[in-house]
Image (tube, rainbow, N blue to C red; front, side, top):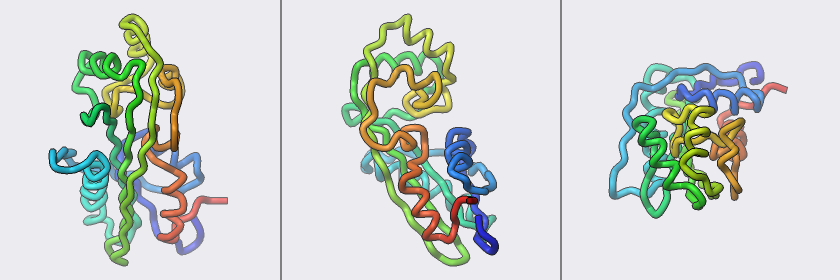
Length: 196
């Protein structure tokens, strides 16, 4: 972040988003929004992720009006069914069994805004993910290695979590939780750039 550049706030408690931004060289603060995600049946997956990202960003921007606020929301969809974070381990098992050997879509809605300047930008990025075919014992082994309850689709696309993935078409960072290929140039349009 250059001298005089606006403050950047990540409106998310996600350690994966924090790591992606940090690895890209951005200096930022974290303020987790107190927002319950909603899933209106009349909206597409992309629209839902953008709507929830916008709500998260606004919740934080109201008390940090001079900062550039970055918020995001990620959902998994298969056969037009939206799959969010699992309710418990039993739900995680069901989700992973449903996705086993199949391709699904991961969509992340991103919202950027600064209340003082009135500037906003919202977009969505989708990637296709193909899972390997796994049996029940392999899923149990996976759940012992990966904490599924804070992840859309009950899996991770990084570290040990990537073992279940056969192929990603599109942005890998999007599957992790923040499509950096689009986030970095979007932040630059707000005057926020990574440290050299």
